[in-house]
Image (cartoon, rainbow, N blue to C red; front, side):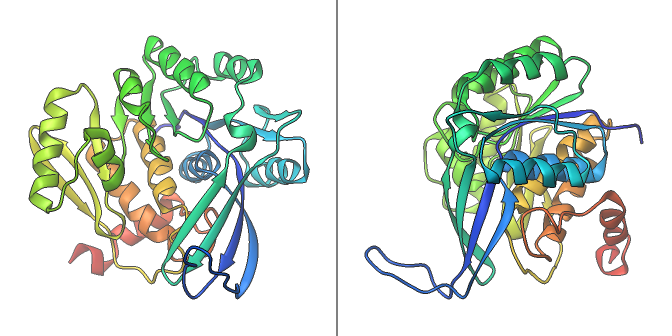
Length: 310
């Protein structure tokens, strides 16, 4: 396979993770069993996931002039990601996320900080890095004006645009004309179409109807069940694999990063989705949003294992 050429425009957060036995109710104080600091943010996670598949990945992001920002740049550099277009913004704090972890799941509260600050440096970085790229991967944790600027420019350059519409915001529908592939989860897809869906059949029918009305490829992620897409009017399922779940944080980001990298390498969509689905499953077997993200060899090894071939 040829070298990937992915540009990720996205967020950087420092994740402050608290282990709890249950989520607190309103007005309730509970005790944590421990605290951990992990580098996260959807953009950072997706950039690392893409880089672990193929090293032809660039990342544009913003942090504050604080210790978390310095830590983020240092850690991403240690992974191998280029950090020359991670900007430190005066007067802004680095994005932070408080993650409440219960067994096999989590709840997250995000303070965007520098991620949402519009600035000329970001647009200059887009102008510098985007030409010649094959895929632009974005989410909704960045400044919306800069995001739209990147999507419009990529469309003009015929760069494939992948938008992960998370965390959901109604601006998604304004951005879709510039998007080639959109990757919502079930809740985000319901928000996009503006109605609740209750059965598997309703989801499939809604997916087919949406694709027929929009010039955008739809990939629906369903967590531990896998992912779905519409090909020639039919819904195709890509099942997740059986894993011993340790931590689900970053699994969706792993999916998007792997998908972007394989699409950029010229792989067919079905293969890209299958690999991304397996990679997302594998990422839940370790702790932290980035440390357990798999490389291409790990995904291939799992796909070729007897239990997956049977």
